[in-house]
Image (cartoon, rainbow over all chains, first blue to last red; front, side, top):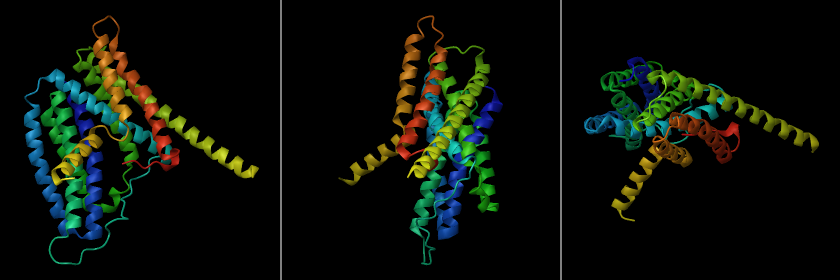
Length: 248
Length: 79
Protein backbone atom coordinates (compact mmCIF):
# COMPACT_ATOMS: atom_id res chain seq x y z
CA UNK A 1 0.00 0.00 0.00
CA UNK A 2 1.44 3.40 -1.01
CA UNK A 3 1.47 6.35 1.48
CA UNK A 4 -1.77 8.30 1.58
CA UNK A 5 -0.50 11.91 1.23
CA UNK A 6 1.15 11.56 -2.23
CA UNK A 7 -2.02 9.83 -3.45
CA UNK A 8 -4.25 12.61 -2.12
CA UNK A 9 -2.06 15.32 -3.70
CA UNK A 10 -1.73 13.51 -7.04
CA UNK A 11 -5.45 12.80 -7.35
CA UNK A 12 -6.41 16.31 -6.20
CA UNK A 13 -4.08 18.08 -8.65
CA UNK A 14 -4.82 15.73 -11.57
CA UNK A 15 -8.57 16.02 -10.96
CA UNK A 16 -8.23 19.81 -10.63
CA UNK A 17 -6.75 20.08 -14.12
CA UNK A 18 -9.69 18.20 -15.62
CA UNK A 19 -12.17 20.02 -13.37
CA UNK A 20 -10.78 23.36 -14.58
CA UNK A 21 -11.45 22.28 -18.17
CA UNK A 22 -14.94 21.08 -17.20
CA UNK A 23 -15.83 24.25 -15.28
CA UNK A 24 -14.34 26.44 -18.01
CA UNK A 25 -16.57 24.78 -20.62
CA UNK A 26 -19.71 25.04 -18.46
CA UNK A 27 -19.03 28.63 -17.31
CA UNK A 28 -18.12 29.70 -20.86
CA UNK A 29 -21.28 28.14 -22.29
CA UNK A 30 -23.51 29.44 -19.50
CA UNK A 31 -22.20 32.97 -19.91
CA UNK A 32 -22.58 32.95 -23.69
CA UNK A 33 -25.66 30.80 -24.40
CA UNK A 34 -27.60 30.94 -21.14
CA UNK A 35 -27.45 28.98 -17.90
CA UNK A 36 -30.62 26.83 -17.93
CA UNK A 37 -29.78 24.46 -20.80
CA UNK A 38 -26.07 24.50 -19.91
CA UNK A 39 -26.75 23.37 -16.34
CA UNK A 40 -29.27 20.76 -17.56
CA UNK A 41 -26.59 19.34 -19.88
CA UNK A 42 -24.04 19.37 -17.05
CA UNK A 43 -26.45 17.57 -14.71
CA UNK A 44 -27.20 14.92 -17.36
CA UNK A 45 -23.44 14.48 -17.87
CA UNK A 46 -22.93 13.92 -14.13
CA UNK A 47 -25.72 11.29 -14.01
CA UNK A 48 -24.21 9.26 -16.89
CA UNK A 49 -20.76 9.70 -15.34
CA UNK A 50 -21.97 8.33 -11.96
CA UNK A 51 -23.34 5.18 -13.64
CA UNK A 52 -20.09 4.61 -15.57
CA UNK A 53 -17.96 5.13 -12.45
CA UNK A 54 -20.08 2.68 -10.43
CA UNK A 55 -19.69 -0.05 -13.09
CA UNK A 56 -15.99 0.70 -13.72
CA UNK A 57 -15.15 0.73 -10.00
CA UNK A 58 -16.86 -2.61 -9.37
CA UNK A 59 -15.11 -4.23 -12.34
CA UNK A 60 -11.70 -3.01 -11.16
CA UNK A 61 -12.08 -4.45 -7.66
CA UNK A 62 -12.18 -8.02 -9.07
CA UNK A 63 -8.77 -7.78 -10.83
CA UNK A 64 -5.54 -8.96 -9.07
CA UNK A 65 -3.16 -6.13 -8.05
CA UNK A 66 0.00 -6.95 -10.13
CA UNK A 67 -1.63 -6.94 -13.61
CA UNK A 68 -3.70 -3.93 -12.50
CA UNK A 69 -0.53 -2.04 -11.53
CA UNK A 70 1.07 -2.93 -14.86
CA UNK A 71 -1.88 -1.83 -17.00
CA UNK A 72 -2.83 1.25 -14.99
CA UNK A 73 0.83 2.22 -14.52
CA UNK A 74 1.40 1.99 -18.29
CA UNK A 75 -1.71 4.11 -18.98
CA UNK A 76 -0.70 6.71 -16.38
CA UNK A 77 2.77 6.78 -17.89
CA UNK A 78 1.37 7.43 -21.38
CA UNK A 79 -1.00 10.13 -20.02
CA UNK A 80 1.72 11.61 -17.82
CA UNK A 81 4.31 11.82 -20.59
CA UNK A 82 1.82 13.55 -22.91
CA UNK A 83 0.83 16.04 -20.18
CA UNK A 84 4.47 16.58 -19.32
CA UNK A 85 5.30 17.29 -22.98
CA UNK A 86 2.40 19.77 -23.25
CA UNK A 87 3.45 21.39 -19.98
CA UNK A 88 7.08 21.69 -21.12
CA UNK A 89 6.11 23.14 -24.52
CA UNK A 90 3.60 25.61 -23.02
CA UNK A 91 5.82 26.79 -20.17
CA UNK A 92 8.73 27.17 -22.61
CA UNK A 93 6.55 29.18 -24.98
CA UNK A 94 4.48 31.35 -22.66
CA UNK A 95 5.60 30.85 -19.09
CA UNK A 96 2.78 30.16 -16.65
CA UNK A 97 0.06 31.66 -18.83
CA UNK A 98 -3.59 30.99 -18.06
CA UNK A 99 -6.04 29.05 -20.14
CA UNK A 100 -8.35 30.99 -22.42
CA UNK A 101 -11.80 29.71 -23.33
CA UNK A 102 -12.38 29.39 -27.05
CA UNK A 103 -15.49 31.51 -27.43
CA UNK A 104 -15.32 31.75 -31.21
CA UNK A 105 -17.94 29.07 -31.71
CA UNK A 106 -21.56 28.82 -30.64
CA UNK A 107 -21.61 32.16 -28.89
CA UNK A 108 -25.13 33.25 -29.88
CA UNK A 109 -27.36 33.80 -26.86
CA UNK A 110 -30.39 31.46 -26.93
CA UNK A 111 -33.64 33.42 -27.05
CA UNK A 112 -36.09 30.66 -28.05
CA UNK A 113 -38.41 28.59 -25.85
CA UNK A 114 -37.51 25.19 -24.43
CA UNK A 115 -34.05 23.66 -24.28
CA UNK A 116 -31.08 25.09 -26.17
CA UNK A 117 -29.74 21.77 -27.46
CA UNK A 118 -26.40 23.25 -28.54
CA UNK A 119 -25.67 24.39 -24.98
CA UNK A 120 -27.09 21.13 -23.57
CA UNK A 121 -24.99 18.82 -25.77
CA UNK A 122 -21.77 20.84 -25.45
CA UNK A 123 -22.15 21.05 -21.68
CA UNK A 124 -23.10 17.34 -21.42
CA UNK A 125 -20.12 16.33 -23.55
CA UNK A 126 -17.70 18.55 -21.63
CA UNK A 127 -18.82 17.26 -18.23
CA UNK A 128 -18.89 13.61 -19.36
CA UNK A 129 -15.50 13.60 -21.11
CA UNK A 130 -13.61 15.62 -18.50
CA UNK A 131 -15.45 13.76 -15.74
CA UNK A 132 -14.42 10.42 -17.27
CA UNK A 133 -10.81 11.54 -17.09
CA UNK A 134 -11.26 12.50 -13.42
CA UNK A 135 -12.94 9.13 -12.75
CA UNK A 136 -10.17 7.29 -14.54
CA UNK A 137 -7.48 9.06 -12.50
CA UNK A 138 -9.36 8.55 -9.21
CA UNK A 139 -10.15 4.86 -9.75
CA UNK A 140 -6.79 3.93 -11.26
CA UNK A 141 -4.56 5.77 -8.78
CA UNK A 142 -6.80 4.87 -5.81
CA UNK A 143 -7.24 1.17 -6.65
CA UNK A 144 -3.60 0.64 -7.63
CA UNK A 145 -2.32 2.23 -4.40
CA UNK A 146 -4.92 0.43 -2.29
CA UNK A 147 -6.35 3.87 -1.32
CA UNK A 148 -9.58 4.02 -3.31
CA UNK A 149 -11.60 5.75 -0.55
CA UNK A 150 -9.17 8.66 -0.02
CA UNK A 151 -8.69 8.95 -3.81
CA UNK A 152 -12.46 9.27 -4.36
CA UNK A 153 -12.63 11.89 -1.59
CA UNK A 154 -9.69 13.79 -3.10
CA UNK A 155 -11.17 13.72 -6.63
CA UNK A 156 -14.57 14.83 -5.30
CA UNK A 157 -12.87 17.60 -3.29
CA UNK A 158 -11.09 18.83 -6.43
CA UNK A 159 -14.38 18.95 -8.35
CA UNK A 160 -16.09 20.79 -5.47
CA UNK A 161 -13.25 23.29 -4.95
CA UNK A 162 -12.81 24.11 -8.66
CA UNK A 163 -16.60 24.09 -9.16
CA UNK A 164 -17.08 26.50 -6.25
CA UNK A 165 -14.33 28.77 -7.56
CA UNK A 166 -15.97 28.61 -10.99
CA UNK A 167 -19.37 29.48 -9.58
CA UNK A 168 -18.15 32.36 -7.41
CA UNK A 169 -15.35 33.73 -9.56
CA UNK A 170 -16.07 32.59 -13.10
CA UNK A 171 -13.58 35.03 -14.59
CA UNK A 172 -10.80 33.73 -12.39
CA UNK A 173 -11.14 30.20 -13.79
CA UNK A 174 -9.78 31.34 -17.14
CA UNK A 175 -6.71 32.77 -15.39
CA UNK A 176 -5.58 29.68 -13.46
CA UNK A 177 -2.07 28.88 -14.70
CA UNK A 178 -2.98 25.65 -16.42
CA UNK A 179 0.46 25.20 -17.97
CA UNK A 180 1.98 25.03 -14.48
CA UNK A 181 -0.66 22.56 -13.26
CA UNK A 182 -0.18 20.49 -16.39
CA UNK A 183 3.56 20.34 -15.79
CA UNK A 184 3.15 19.33 -12.12
CA UNK A 185 0.47 16.72 -12.84
CA UNK A 186 2.44 15.38 -15.80
CA UNK A 187 5.41 14.92 -13.46
CA UNK A 188 3.31 13.14 -10.82
CA UNK A 189 1.52 10.84 -13.28
CA UNK A 190 4.78 9.95 -15.03
CA UNK A 191 6.41 9.22 -11.67
CA UNK A 192 3.62 6.99 -10.35
CA UNK A 193 3.14 5.44 -13.80
CA UNK A 194 6.74 4.31 -14.18
CA UNK A 195 6.87 3.15 -10.53
CA UNK A 196 3.70 1.04 -10.69
CA UNK A 197 4.16 -0.32 -14.22
CA UNK A 198 7.66 -1.55 -13.33
CA UNK A 199 6.45 -2.99 -10.00
CA UNK A 200 3.60 -4.70 -11.84
CA UNK A 201 6.23 -6.67 -13.78
CA UNK A 202 7.63 -7.99 -10.49
CA UNK A 203 10.64 -5.62 -10.42
CA UNK A 204 11.69 -4.22 -7.01
CA UNK A 205 12.74 -0.56 -6.75
CA UNK A 206 15.83 0.27 -4.68
CA UNK A 207 14.54 1.79 -1.44
CA UNK A 208 10.94 0.68 -2.05
CA UNK A 209 8.40 3.56 -2.01
CA UNK A 210 11.22 6.10 -1.41
CA UNK A 211 12.20 5.54 -5.05
CA UNK A 212 9.09 7.61 -5.96
CA UNK A 213 10.86 10.74 -4.65
CA UNK A 214 13.98 9.90 -6.65
CA UNK A 215 11.92 9.43 -9.83
CA UNK A 216 10.09 12.71 -9.21
CA UNK A 217 13.38 14.59 -8.78
CA UNK A 218 14.84 12.96 -11.92
CA UNK A 219 11.80 13.81 -14.06
CA UNK A 220 11.64 17.37 -12.67
CA UNK A 221 15.27 17.88 -13.68
CA UNK A 222 14.52 16.42 -17.13
CA UNK A 223 11.54 18.78 -17.56
CA UNK A 224 13.56 21.84 -16.47
CA UNK A 225 16.36 20.95 -18.91
CA UNK A 226 13.83 20.51 -21.73
CA UNK A 227 12.21 23.88 -20.97
CA UNK A 228 15.65 25.55 -21.00
CA UNK A 229 16.58 23.87 -24.31
CA UNK A 230 13.25 24.91 -25.88
CA UNK A 231 13.63 28.51 -24.72
CA UNK A 232 17.19 28.66 -26.12
CA UNK A 233 15.93 27.19 -29.40
CA UNK A 234 13.18 29.80 -29.64
CA UNK A 235 15.68 32.58 -28.85
CA UNK A 236 18.05 31.32 -31.58
CA UNK A 237 15.13 31.13 -34.01
CA UNK A 238 14.24 34.78 -33.37
CA UNK A 239 17.90 35.83 -33.76
CA UNK A 240 18.19 33.99 -37.10
CA UNK A 241 14.96 35.63 -38.30
CA UNK A 242 16.21 39.10 -37.31
CA UNK A 243 19.59 38.55 -39.02
CA UNK A 244 17.95 37.40 -42.25
CA UNK A 245 15.69 40.49 -42.18
CA UNK A 246 18.76 42.74 -41.69
CA UNK A 247 20.56 40.96 -44.57
CA UNK A 248 17.62 41.73 -46.89
CA UNK B 1 -21.68 4.17 -43.75
CA UNK B 2 -24.43 2.93 -41.45
CA UNK B 3 -25.24 4.61 -38.16
CA UNK B 4 -23.83 1.65 -36.20
CA UNK B 5 -20.55 1.70 -38.14
CA UNK B 6 -20.09 5.43 -37.72
CA UNK B 7 -20.87 5.05 -33.98
CA UNK B 8 -18.26 2.30 -33.69
CA UNK B 9 -15.70 4.40 -35.58
CA UNK B 10 -16.44 7.36 -33.30
CA UNK B 11 -16.20 5.14 -30.21
CA UNK B 12 -12.85 3.73 -31.36
CA UNK B 13 -11.58 7.18 -32.23
CA UNK B 14 -12.56 8.51 -28.77
CA UNK B 15 -10.64 5.75 -26.97
CA UNK B 16 -7.66 6.11 -29.32
CA UNK B 17 -7.49 9.85 -28.60
CA UNK B 18 -8.15 9.24 -24.90
CA UNK B 19 -5.42 6.60 -24.41
CA UNK B 20 -2.88 7.10 -27.21
CA UNK B 21 -3.29 10.89 -27.47
CA UNK B 22 -1.70 12.99 -30.20
CA UNK B 23 1.71 11.27 -30.22
CA UNK B 24 1.51 7.51 -30.77
CA UNK B 25 5.29 7.13 -30.34
CA UNK B 26 4.90 7.79 -26.58
CA UNK B 27 2.52 4.85 -26.14
CA UNK B 28 4.65 2.65 -28.41
CA UNK B 29 7.86 3.45 -26.52
CA UNK B 30 6.18 2.80 -23.16
CA UNK B 31 4.97 -0.60 -24.44
CA UNK B 32 8.44 -1.49 -25.80
CA UNK B 33 10.12 -0.27 -22.58
CA UNK B 34 7.84 -2.48 -20.47
CA UNK B 35 8.47 -5.48 -22.74
CA UNK B 36 12.25 -4.96 -22.43
CA UNK B 37 11.88 -4.60 -18.63
CA UNK B 38 9.91 -7.84 -18.48
CA UNK B 39 12.44 -9.71 -20.63
CA UNK B 40 15.53 -8.44 -18.77
CA UNK B 41 13.92 -9.10 -15.37
CA UNK B 42 14.98 -12.75 -15.57
CA UNK B 43 18.70 -11.82 -15.53
CA UNK B 44 20.89 -9.92 -13.03
CA UNK B 45 20.55 -6.55 -14.80
CA UNK B 46 19.04 -3.74 -12.59
CA UNK B 47 15.96 -3.45 -14.82
CA UNK B 48 14.34 -0.62 -12.88
CA UNK B 49 16.55 1.80 -14.89
CA UNK B 50 14.76 0.99 -18.16
CA UNK B 51 11.52 2.98 -17.69
CA UNK B 52 13.20 6.15 -16.32
CA UNK B 53 15.50 6.04 -19.38
CA UNK B 54 12.47 5.63 -21.66
CA UNK B 55 10.83 8.66 -20.00
CA UNK B 56 13.93 10.87 -20.34
CA UNK B 57 14.48 9.97 -24.02
CA UNK B 58 10.79 10.04 -25.02
CA UNK B 59 10.09 13.40 -23.38
CA UNK B 60 12.81 14.98 -25.54
CA UNK B 61 11.71 13.12 -28.69
CA UNK B 62 8.04 13.98 -28.12
CA UNK B 63 8.77 17.67 -27.49
CA UNK B 64 10.77 17.80 -30.74
CA UNK B 65 7.99 16.01 -32.65
CA UNK B 66 5.48 18.47 -31.21
CA UNK B 67 7.60 21.41 -32.42
CA UNK B 68 7.96 19.90 -35.89
CA UNK B 69 4.20 19.37 -36.16
CA UNK B 70 3.11 22.80 -34.94
CA UNK B 71 5.94 25.04 -36.03
CA UNK B 72 8.35 26.19 -33.34
CA UNK B 73 7.81 26.80 -29.70
CA UNK B 74 5.69 29.93 -29.97
CA UNK B 75 2.72 28.36 -31.71
CA UNK B 76 1.86 25.63 -29.26
CA UNK B 77 -1.76 25.23 -28.26
CA UNK B 78 -2.52 21.58 -27.75
CA UNK B 79 -5.76 20.06 -26.46
